[in-house]
Length: 355
View 1 (cartoon, helix red, strand yellow):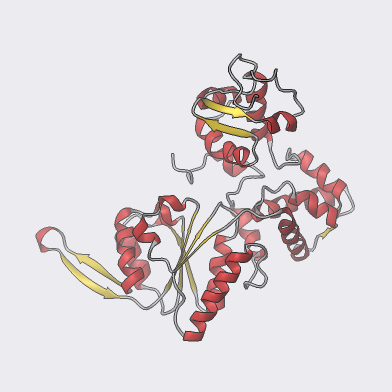
View 2 (cartoon, rainbow, N blue to C red):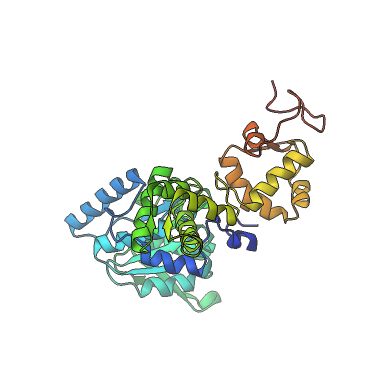
């Protein structure tokens, strides 16, 4: 199963990084318009600013840009900023939408000079379209095949200079020939809580919501280092504050609201805690196989592996080992449980973290 083909559980989660229609509508209103407004990713912003300013000074189109990183970190926002900084229109599409080389040829042939083409999930583009993109990026030309069989003819089609901005959550799936054709590549890192606090204050001002500094810090600490999740939690806390408080988001209001939505102080939700509780209470901390753990939780194997586990591993609460999933000491502490005897786990197997 492809990592981007996330199960329905992923789209229903309050702390999920995928964007639904509501998120997309709100993000459009909250997006910064230039690099100076963009919060976080200092190194990427500094490097990208140099690339764009140099291109403007030369009167040329900017180099092709590849942005990689987890969902919700601002790749789409940066692509729009690139177009705005270059004073160019932007065309937005995605890899899954381009299943044939003809689909890509139709898009490329309609581009204007200097236009920015944003290709989201570029790693999911079909191989024939990918091979056509090589020539388009390097030579601003594509060969359109007319006819079939021995009578087929390749007609060269010249393209106006354009800037391709590719976005991917899995840069390792891009073939080297495609990666090499990008003039600038950047990896988007997860945000620090202080950066997310700035994101929350900015979004609150645009949404006309009053949020106190401790309230913003409470939301930021549960946002998994992702601005999209921070903005989503802010909206849910705003609803709670308007209904059950005086509309002001304080630390107490934020904590009470997120308790209602089952998001704990580390950003874990019901699914995350269910996985940890099954691992700790039923299997003594592991090792336990993924399929067994999924059955115990009552979820599909793919849901546990692709939706819950990445964040638990990143938080140091769970480890993937050749023998199965193992809980770390931090997982026992987070759930307020006491680990079994030193050196062994509850099922009598050797504890990988024992001394």
